[in-house]
Image (cartoon, rainbow, N blue to C red; front, side):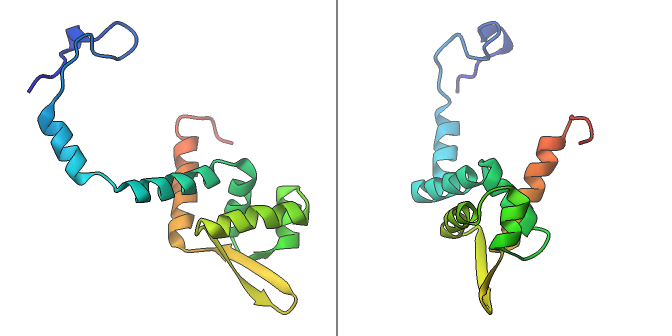
Length: 131
């Protein structure tokens, strides 16, 4: 097994100055790696969370169920724009809705989504002044 020592790193870029491979590490990681279809679905979830408008919508839904008109007011965009974003969030399994008379009331799809939002906010706020 060949591993770069501290003195083998190129200064400033964190890259080994020598080309060595740890075959055992590669084998262990490859055997335990997430299957490609699941990697793609997971990346799609994170891409949906990366948009500030969609994140604001999910953050609002993490607090309570809301209809499209409420979400439009919170997000500062049109109801049509919110509907478009909600469709994308539903397609990725992040939001769900129920009918309440003439209204569609939205909620988070499950507690995992609430956890993603909470953990993301906690991580983003680490080492930053209170906002």
